[in-house]
Image (cartoon, rainbow, N blue to C red; front, side, top):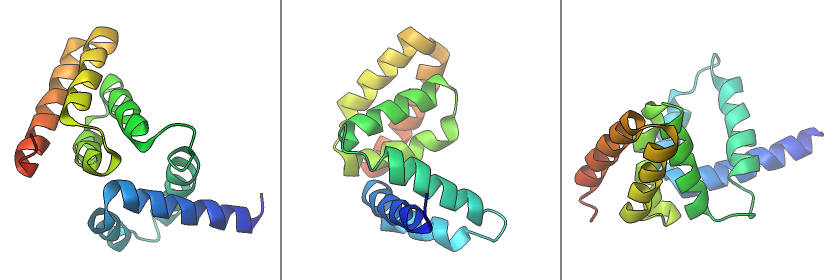
Length: 130
């Protein structure tokens, strides 16, 4: 891969990251970046955002729902609130999010789904989203 390919993926990743998470979130993350974590931030911008999220094979709504399911199913709860907030930008509705966590309950366990729902409800309450 050339550095141009890498730069292109980085730029595409940053654009979709801003579209999904919002400028304020990305600006804060970029401001908090240090030389210690800069290589990691580049990696996730190029791979997660520039390759996976930038693909047009499925919609941002579907990616958002998949991401929430995987995060909950694997017990990676720290990023759930951020991705629930992002549903405003991806088109996933509150109903979609609850459907996702019902699937998690059946296929990955009720305690994980229950905790994910608790986090989602907190975000929905903060944003006064029906």
